[in-house]
Amino acid sequence: MTTANKITLTRIAMIPFFLYFASQSMLLFDQDATAHSIVPTYQFPTATVVALVLFCVASFTDFLDGYVARKYNQVTDFGKFVDPLADKLLVSSALILFAEQGAIAGWMVCVILARELIITSLRVVAANKGRVLAATWTGKVKTCVQIGGIIVIYLYYILLPNMDFGNGPLWLMPPQYVQQLSGDISSITLVAIVGWVVTLVTIYSGWDYLRKNWDIIKDGAVKQK
Image (cartoon, rainbow, N blue to C red; front, side, top):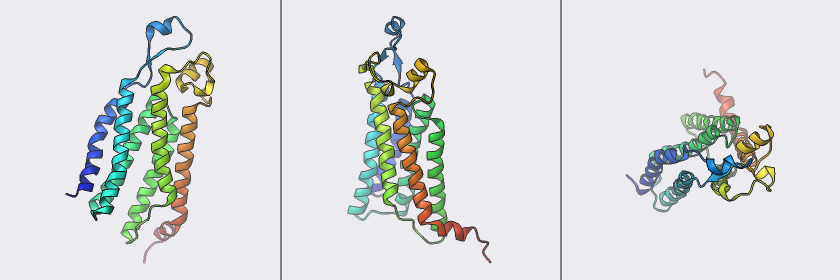
């Protein structure tokens, strides 16, 4: 097995550990302090820090295995299949847990996952026709935005204990607290803005792939004689 593939498998092996720490609550309340104040007081989320570190290391291996594969001519069919699968497992896991924890809207995660499934299916159809879909710049930007957005959300929740919500602007507050304070689930917060950016960039990337490869879909819709 090549070094590049070993790095990819290492990334997959890190995902269960990431899931364990990422599934812990990102908002830890100080019950005693909160009992004497309208504004909740948060404790430092150690598990979230560990989850962020694991996510960053795993994301770096995505760059590393590609670099090693190209430099040392270790590009394999196994790597072509497993590498994007590992990326999607890592990013999807983080987004699904965000939805469960209320950090990002569930429908946004559904749209993002739908895009990934559609493009993956398109790649399979193209491969059956002997055609390889080259990565586009929009796809690369999408990946960077998704990873960057996840990191920003984690950093935000890690820094929450040091924020003064009594005097701070509403958009800097966590979605859970905004809903509790105003009762408005649609209130715009920093986390919500990140979610919108990631979702819109992902949608545009998917549309760009479909637009450039529409002939594959068109041909596939015609019954072959």
